[in-house]
Length: 182
Image (spheres, rainbow, N blue to C red):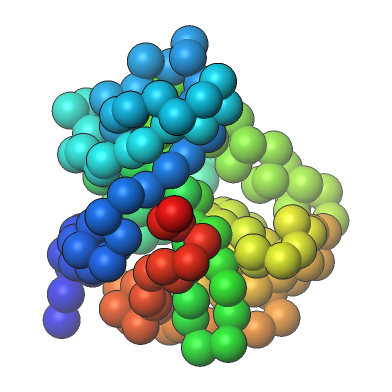
């Protein structure tokens, strides 16, 4: 059985092999180590790199009085990369990635807000990890208790299970070539 890190690494390798030139939003203030050639003021080529200091969840876990599922921590504390356009069965998904330390801080703030919303709605706590490519209100999430990967509408519970674990789901994902290359 693969570890979460092995599945994430295998996906990143497939992504690099199938999409030799990748583009992402350029945010000059971030000084991201993934940035390559600047295409224009909003777009830059990117190359994934391992995070030199993995994103830390400890302070947020203490503040929220919860422990994040190991798969969530593995996904967001392994690589700096642009978001990954993927296909999974008949779903087109943009898997969120962390581009820099500053982006990691922003991600943690967004995760905190999502958890607080779920608590207010008295729903199972999930962590969003992506978006449907054709609808920003359809989230890809991990159930923080079970680790199940599924889809949920903003403000609703998961309604469709895509994988029993992040590793299983990632192993079945494929890069969406037309969304990522010229």
